[in-house]
Image 1 (cartoon, protein in one colour):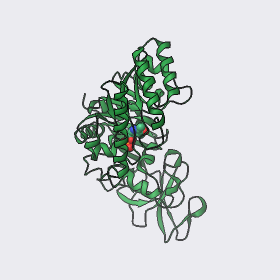
Image 2: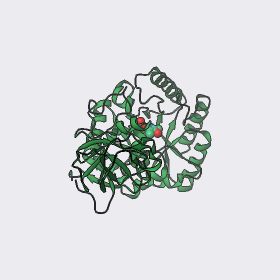
Image 3: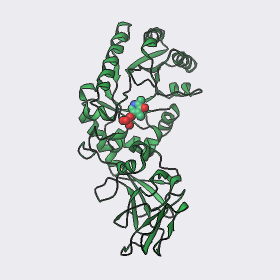
Image 4: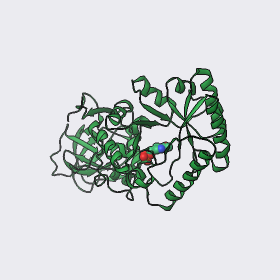
Length: 382
Ligand SMILES: *Cc1c(COP(=O)(O)O)cnc(C)c1O
């Protein structure tokens, strides 16, 4: 793979992997998949990734914000689509007009949604969200009965249609943690209460990537995976991506911009956090913290440089990092660099980067900056 001209670093995104991972999630869970494409499809590029997920069998797409969902509609996506997090001033009327399902998790928000439905003159499709134990979004158990009663009344008045009931787990990275089962129990009780209050036979969704892959017993009607769509495992307790049949979709690439020889004992990069142990060759890689390389990976971040496995020497800068190649290295300017990929060719993985910088793979992939071009491969299906 050659560099797009003049681009210092680029993220190669394999759309065939996204298609295949979506199909894997469908098989593992046994139910319909709502592929989560928030945050620019976890940094992979919203539109292309969403299309690939649809081609892989995602009957639903999910975003955090209405604006993200509207961008999908503007790009021509006409399928089932849910947005669940509504900040002050969110374009709920725009969502209703564009036939985007909205999550409602409070009485206050229900009122705004009813207003939007009346303003647009169209029934709003609503997913009522219960807080089953994450204590983040969702109606807490004390508000649930009132929310459901008002929603049933709004449905009878023709303002809304209750499409689904849903909740979100706290231990998505530990699908066998007892809290997952406790939350599923709480969600079940919330669903029963809703049924008693007159909510009809509606869909239910609960599971993010970890439980979608490992807990088909908790799949309900739809699973809602994000990370696994992009071929990564949420954590060791879920399993290795390859064992789960997932293919990492993103390979972060660059090329060597400069190589130089230096003496023993020279300080390298800002503040001399690395000193050469002997005479050696250093290479400059034009990707830095503005591009998503965590500065916490100073002296740690692994790289494959011209086929040679090495790591960052010294401080991560805004636009660049340095590696110590050793005197024998034959690496030269223009050689390929893999920051992370599927790991099959000896390159580091996003999980290696998470480990090297004290974070999680989610943050490694979603923090890739706007200067990094997204280059799509595997789009040969059509
Ligand atoms: C981000 C998110 C998901 C997807 O989680 P993954 O762990 O990436 O699978 C699902 N549901 C909600 C509500 C989310 O915010």
